Length: 284
Ligand code: SAM
Image (cartoon, rainbow, N blue to C red; front, side, top):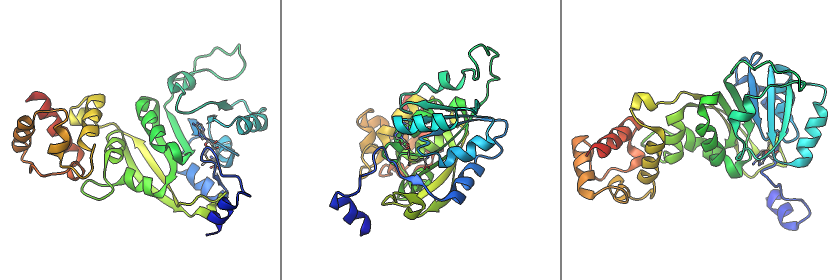
């Protein structure tokens, strides 16, 4: 294919940092629309790049904070928006950013010490695909700061995040995402919507933050640890995966009490059932 030939010929630079820029203006509008009314909101953009989404966001959001790792791109954007104090460009690695500190700072001249009304933030980004899961885990860690997350990710990853229990794509990423958010798949774009085109299709997801910890009666960190063990080896049964952390007899008793077959795999279990197994195992 053309892409492979060009990449192999060495005449074209391989995109670094997942830099495939959105070239479809209509899609940029649609992604921002998916955030809802942002006229009174703080928006955090991850990886603004050349600013396809930034341009639309800057017109609509009350305040925009965009985090870009590429120094040249961050500098260019900062220059472009230098006269718009509601737009702040931060040159940083999104995986290392302390969102709480960044989002709760005041803006404007240094002598403007009026405290910001604490606002929950809308997150948006055409993500660098090589770190999608890491970014999501980081956003979940700070979930109390966010209302809604609209992201573009590789189509196959979107399928996994949105998958229902019992389907082939359901796994640790689906369970974790659905523990913190309500996930909706919005639309898919072909490679030629980007420059340079990636090798994959891309899907836009809206994730409305709605943690289920109280309803499931679990502590998130402990439960996520349990899910990691339960999903550790996809081909193994739940029983075999859990043997790493619990005695076999205890697991067998627990599954029996919960009315679950011993040969079940973690991907068949809805979150309610996984949470029930976890709670019983902790008691037994
Ligand atoms: N939003 C732009 C668009 O839609 O055209 C660019 C999207 S591009 C897929 C991903 C962007 O994320 C690039 O600009 C890249 O430099 C930036 N990026 C990559 N790794 C990053 C990181 N760890 N922290 C912040 N930005 C990062």
